[in-house]
Image 1 (tube, rainbow, N blue to C red):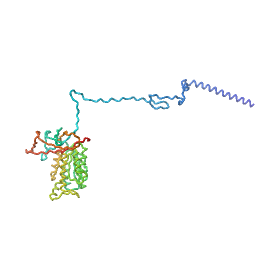
Image 2: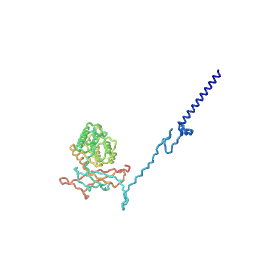
Image 3: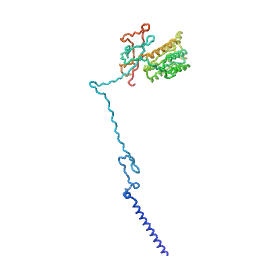
Image 4: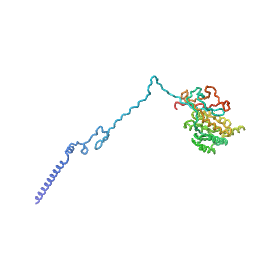
Length: 410
């Protein structure tokens, strides 16, 4: 009975195995009919070492990009742009018979402002270029251009206002207000005062009320020192950045008490500065004469000993500063002179003859050149000027004493 049972089970196992094998054969035959023949060939011919059965592709030489799992990233090749040809130099047409030449000018033009007045201070008008003779270091110069200047003025009113002498302060303020009264609407004016150091009250303005407002601030003085050289040097430095012709109206006693700079240094600074004319107006003459009549010197400030010799030296310095820059120094003896005095300064500034020349000495050596200007008749003789009554008048010619030539490294 047991043998019959095993025989029956063995037959069932073989029958199941035969059935499974038949089903597998049928499935493979159906699958082969679905897969394309090209895919079968590729799978059969795939080389060893390929990824996922895919052949490894090499990047073409012209692709130039990085590779990836699916092949190279093709980057278009950049076209080589040819550089534009250099511009051809333009040369002037050749004219037969004309020689080749070149011009090189080293000497710069020099401008000299000249003021011509009578002995009484009246401006002498209607002069021509033929009336002027110009000399540099004694050598005659040829005038290139000649004009009469009547342009608006650009000026700095520099006032000494310190705790020195009450009479000095009062006269300085009177002189400053007198100058402000002569201003015209197109003038540019800056106001500054100094004691131990310079103080800017108002920058360049065309508003006359702003000028009066700046002067109204001068009521309570501070230090008793009057450092004129330092203040003048600072003002000249600021004016270097202003183009055109400039003027400094210097209202001062002329006494320097404690400046860091010496007279030699401020003199050199004035020589090296161009296009700046200084018009000093001395104050304190009344009180000085009163003390001189008593055999004493006018006090200048608390604890500052100043003798009559110091005042005389200050006067000479003012004359020197004016002569070096083509201005004039004024020494009023009483307050009533102030309005007329500043009217003369305004007239002098607004009526000047401007001469331009090219020096015969074209060396750029930075030396100081002395200038001399003469006014003569057109025939070279003495120029005769008559007043309204027909009397002969002597004339005064005011121009700067010289200038500093440019240096080769400027």
